[in-house]
Image (cartoon, rainbow, N blue to C red; front, side, top):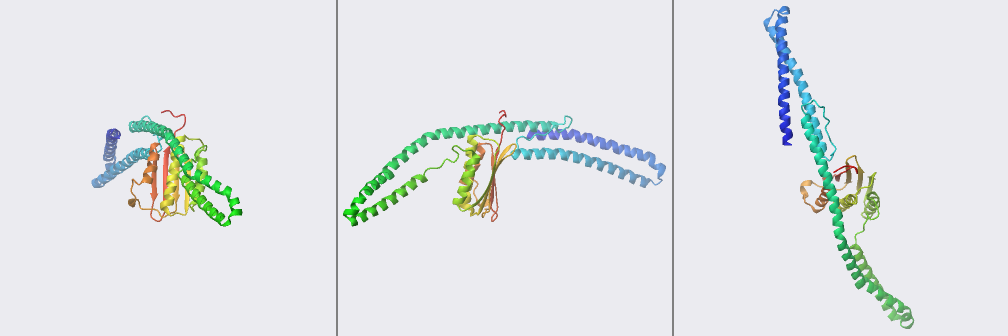
Length: 347
């Protein structure tokens, strides 16, 4: 960027010098022509000099305005391109005319944009690979967790179900022989079954359903989002538009961001309505989640808050960024942007 500014100053110096010389030459021509022709038409010397001065000022103003507009357009084009690049449009390029003093700056900008696009694309690939490696490394932990759950089921629910079976199998005989004793057995059956049910619910609560298994991201969200809203008494609106399949790692990160954002809505927003949109643009995947809840003042929320930092970390792993817009009493809107690269793009 420093190199760009130095080149801008250098080019502008010489171009402005040329414009200054042109203005000076035209002003001199106006003065000479005026001194030659005006005395033939006007006898008042003071009036002649007033006309000459106004003519020089008019010529200088017109040329100065033209020069200012020309330079302003060039600077505006550079500024707009920088903004587009900073907002995730990595395909932004400035066309070169081949004869403009700003062409060197534009060329450096385009070169920087190409380099940044390749680096972000590489970052996304590395992020996806990191997610895949993390999933692979978790397989052993998942297997160990399954063994633990099997042991817990055997030591608790399985034994209680066996006790229920024994008691139930003898209940019909006890009713005929000793009805009061049968009532005690029924009470024990009720107690054991209730205890087994509670333990089973506890074990099930430890399991996280894998919504993406065997489904695309769009299918998973279409199933999960309405169900989540219904269980949490929210009115949900959803619009997911993905025209092509995306990588497993990107699907996983986006789905986790959706889950974490919705969990924040339920915990903190006190909202009635939630809207989720996910669409792909030419160069971006854009996720919006907005609610009509109580909102918050950003100054009251720590930037390293676990929920927000986790979502931001997930987006940044794939070269993306997250923006949060909120105001007390006006709800909250989360915007996530992930760069989208075409499949035939070279790294």
